[in-house]
Length: 314
Length: 301
Image (cartoon, rainbow over all chains, first blue to last red; front, side, top):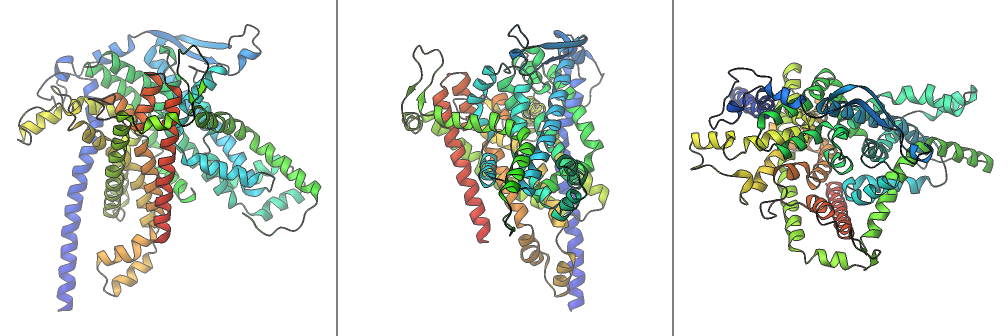
């Protein structure tokens, strides 16, 4: 009797598993479809894109949409404002460095976006690792106050401070430069909190041993602390890169001139100006999505590990 | 943090404080300059009548901005929409991602990563690229929703999905859901994988059903993850902005306004900075209360 029951259970289980798998595959198809629609849409002719009966697969792959995308306004490949340089440039204006040939605006948007995400990532990791170590391993006046300030700030949505932030950026002559997007991202205290959690696991004895061996503060930090919190730095780097790349709101309020846009803003602008030219918009979306998806697929394992680890410590 | 420390000399304390602040300095520069000071200014300006293009300087008006908020029908509608989004998307995201994770976490490695990647793709693709393709799919004439819907007989005639008050908010929530399950699934898969397998085996030997194993063993073990997911999903839903701005701009007839979008609108279309700041402060308070409630709820369990 009991045996029968068990067998029935097993049978029932595998049927349930099969149903699950089928449902999951359908869901996977639905989740992949928008991406498929972007990529194929980018290569469709205007007639196919604006067809009432959807064209599921482009009959003739065309590059017209990309040609249109790349025919837009030219800009130098590389242009960077030196932050705070207006105070010492002599002219009162910020120093601007440009380099490279004139390229289509869309290429420039891509360059801007990569620079923004990488700069935010590097600055956040560097500052947060130092600060997290100090908060976890040192005792100093104002520690409790600073820590509660960090926790409180983390719970607030950063969008609520948009107006003061815009005014401040204008006052610092950073408004409409890529730094206006980077600096608030770096200031966001989540990274410090995360790195504090990771630094807690560094044994105090090791720090003391290094000190007794005559290592200075900085050497202790670089030779003992950093190797031990490396997984944390990796997780934080991934977090910051993705969230900065996708932080449309901050980019929208801080950047306005065409050559300064990020790729997200660029597509939004394309959409605002050519509301029904879906082929062109899809070409822009493909340009934005494909590089970051490639990066994601290559580092997929680290991404998922990093996300899981960040949550455990956070 | 407060471990027992032997009494140390003042010189040592001072030296440690100095070195701590040297390590903190770069971070504090950004944190104070671009987060703390703007936050203080945000709260301060919310008590002023600060509007662009006014001749006079900002005038102090006390709580007048806050009082006006509760009489502003557009704000109240935006608030209601925000709550609808949160109340629908948070539970659905949590249940959906828990179900998917339970179904996939014991699958063979390749299959597991395939599903994990697929559900995470919309997060990586980025809100703008995702939004523009959905806008096309929802389009009245060229969108596939109307084609498939009428073809299968699900709808009688074309629906102007994003232009109809009845459907617009629902469409936005649907897209929001596809972009918000990725992270919870990654977290749940990792949390379920960390549940002690011997506990589960012991229960199964004792004849526990799968459902009992789930509620008695897995669920309590993944509670911290659930709490974390609840908090981040709530905050994300509250901040839903790109979708609204790109799809409907709050329309039709303010039916898809959220607090976040209305703050943006008040700032860049009405130029009423003090009023927008008051809204920002209210939003922050709502999020703080909700997070606190979720934490309290989880503690009691």
